[in-house]
Image (cartoon, rainbow, N blue to C red):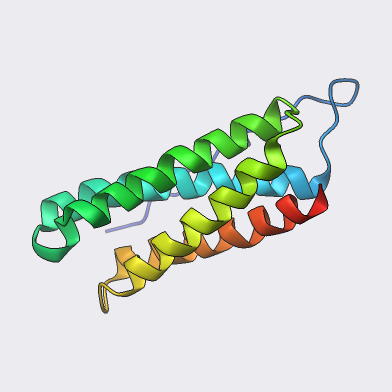
Length: 132
């Protein structure tokens, strides 16, 4: 069966020049936060379907915490909130915890992908929180 190639439209969630300017570092952090939020949200569904230790209340709660803090941090940066460094600091902490828990699930590709997204977000949020 032939593979169908689809061209992805380029989505630019930032205003063009002339609008409020975000640094390249902040844009990358926003993208990492939004990506991590999406990955963790999809992982919640995966874990609930998988059951057992994947569906443990503490694990699901941590994934949901990660989803929410990532969205919040992205929102604070997009709005230019002077408190964005504080939300990014919390986001880095939650993402690190989530990555650690996901890695404990063993040799599972979905959990590894989630941990990777969380670690990437944690790293960029740590940098962002240190810049303030």
